[in-house]
Amino acid sequence: MATDYDSPRKIDDGSGEESLQELQTRRADTSSGSIDVDETDLAESLELPGADLSNEELSVRVIPPQADEFTCSSCFLVHHRSQRASERNGQQVCLECAA
Image (cartoon, rainbow, N blue to C red; front, side):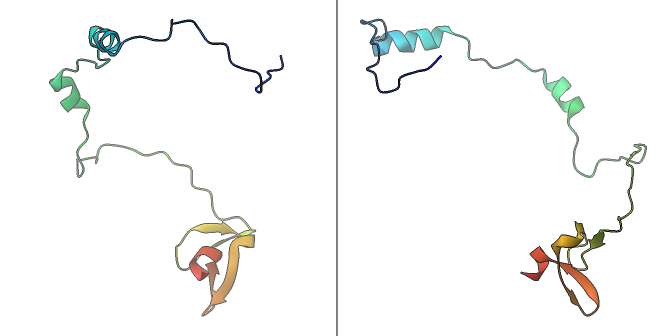
């Protein structure tokens, strides 16, 4: 369905005009939308930095660099060979580190 954005808009007769007091009372009547959270439940799910994670196990598949990739000697990220800028002292550097 095509819409003509140049045509005049339809105006509702008075239905959109409400007093400030009516809007404020309606806003006060509705709930604030906040959820009551039990503090003990929140504290149990909170992870503090430096927490003991010795019993946790990570399962990450490590893929070795491919033939068309290189490791930047400055940022140590693996990039595609099209991102290689130059070699500095025999070491490969990416475009971002060379700039």
